[in-house]
Image (cartoon, rainbow over all chains, first blue to last red; front, side, top):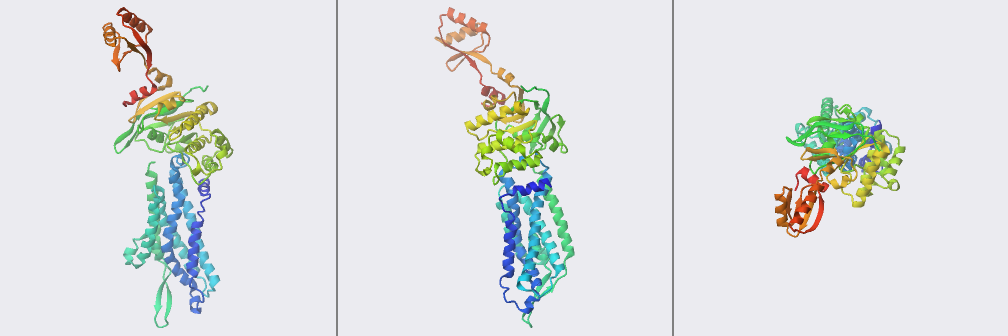
Length: 249
Length: 305
C-alpha cells in the first residue's frame, strides 16, 4: 500500500487526473451534440444509441488517452533516471505492478466516468428508454478489459522507451487502426488490439427504409471473445513484465 | 578516528560479461569497515558495472558479493541494501517535485522517519533550497540532493559513483569536504569511484585500481604512495662525462631530457656521486629530488601513456 501511495505522491503537480477528465468531457460533448430536440422515437432508444456510440468513440479516443496517461506516469522515471535508486529500495516487479495499478485505476475511473456520462445524458436529454443496466455493465467490463490490454502495451513501451515519442505515436497509430479495423474482414479485425473497443458493442445499427429510421438491434455479448481477450491480456502482461525484469539498467 | 574492524564489502571472482566480453573480470574487492575506499579506474574500466553488481542492479556472470557480512542474493538483497545508501552515475530525481518532496518519497520507500529529511537537507546544505523544484537545481545541487537521499536512514555503507562528475572546482571541494566528514560523524564506510586519482587522493584511506575490468592494485593509500619512487635529477657542467663516470662506478644513472636521473633513494649514493663528480672536476649546477606523482603511478598501473 505504501508503494502505491508513493506512486500517487510522485504525481504531485502533474494533474494526471485531468487526462481522463478531459477525454470524458469530449465524450460528453460528442454524445450530447446534435441531440437537441430529439423525437419520441429517438428518446425511446437514447441509452441504446449512446451504448452504440461510446465504443466507437472509445476506439478513437482511448488509445490516445491511454498512451498519454501511461507516458506521463512513466516518463518521470525515465527523465529523472530514477531506476538505479528505486531498485535499491523496492523490488523491480513490485515497481512494475504498482505503476501499472496506478494507471489502471485512472482507466477504471474513466470507465466509471463514462457510465456517469451515460446517466447524465439520460437525465439531461430526458430519455424515455429504461436504462439497460446489463448492457451498460457489459460495456463497462469490455472497455475496462480492452483498456487494460492496450495499457499493458503502453506501459512497457513508456517504461522502456528513452523517448516518449514512441509510445505516443503507438497510441495515435492505434487510434487510426482501431477505427479502420471496423471495416476490415472480421478475422483480420480481430488481430487489431485497439479495434476491440468497438468489438463488444451491444448493438448494431440498421436502417429501416420503410420507416426511414435508424434501428438499433441488440447483439448478444461475445463471451468467447471476451474470455480470449482476457487470457491474451494476462499473458501479455506477464510477458511484458518478464521483459522489463530481465532488462538490466 | 574510526576503528577499522572488518570487511564491509567483499567480492569473490566477481565477473560480468556482455556479449561474451568480460567487462569486469575476477574482481576480489575488499573494503574494510570505517574506510573511505577510492575505487579508481579510467573511463570504461568497469567501475560503474561493479557498483551496479554491488547493489544487485546488474547480475554477475560469475562470482559473488558479500555485503555487510552476508552473501547477497535475490532474497536478501533489499534487506541488505536497507543499510546502504547509493548514488550511481548521475543523481536520480523527480524534476517536477521540490527537493524536499523528492526526499520525502525516498524516506517513505526507505521507511525512515520524515524528520530525517530535515537533517539530511541540513547536512548537504540544501535547507534553503528545499522548496525549489529540482528541475531548477544546478548540477551541484542535484548531486547534493542525491547524496542527501543516500544518507537517509544513516546507512552503514555508502556507495558513491563519481559523485563529483560535472561539478565545478568549488562544487568538487564542497562535495569532498562533505564526504570526508561522514565516516567520523555517522560511522559510515564509503566506497567512492572516480577516474581522477588526484581528486580522491585527499579523502580516501584505501584505494583499489581497476583497469579493463581487472583489479590491478588494492591496498591502503599510504602503500600506494610508497610507489611514488624518489630519485635524483641532476644537471652538471658536462652531463655526458658525468653519466659515463657514474655508470662506470655502478650507479643507476640515466640521461633524459638534457638531465641525469639517478634512480636511488639512498643518501650514501648521493654522497658518493658528489665525490665522483668533484674528483673529475665536473660542476653540479642543479640537483633535485624527483618524486613520481600519484597520477604517474595510476597511469603506470593502468598502462596508459
